[in-house]
Length: 264
Image (cartoon, rainbow, N blue to C red; front, side, top):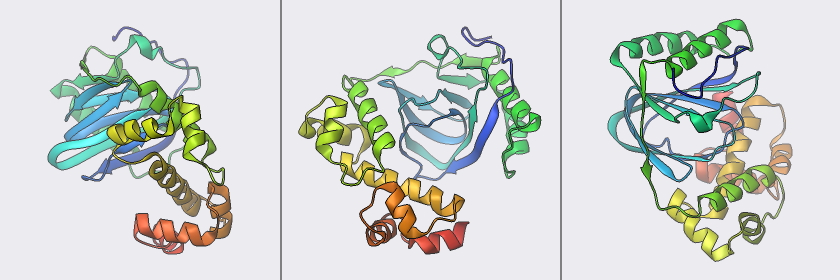
């Protein structure tokens, strides 16, 4: 068993199960729940705590809540990640003593495929079935059938400031007129320097990230609520429903209503 991983006293509560695939799966994320990533195909770069991991088929990435991570595809015609979002009801695992990334042995990979197949395509429920399967996957992660993967250090002295900036945006995205100056104060950097390091790390500007995060939240509300577009625009910090429609169409290629009709 990997040092630092203890037995679960309660089953995990599954929040969401997803399959991420294609060359466009990339970006910076801070999720409120635990993430279990299994790489089925392709090569990826994961950045966590100013370290870079090259991830490939058979690798598991276990990310604790509210940890900034940057994901980028590297190579491969097929790029597929299997992802489980879950909560631990008996408190956090001591991740500082455990690796973020492990490589599984060949004989365990079919077991992972079978277990994930039992989850995929079904609506998650906080019950023994979903929690038990997730606990089994965590058991594979913690067992002797895996090997910890060493990171590649990166010269990223401002990673803490970037974490503070992203956390601030995710907590205050609904504030109308959210300005770069306010975000930079929260990050502890000048506006100009924050823009520079943000672009270096994430490939987009700070304010572009604010807009993209608001659109992401709009998607969730369009699919999981009955709120009108005007109410959604108000809830995510846009000045008007017209601003929401214009920006949503620019980023997603369709209007908010068409998106709701197509995917809900």
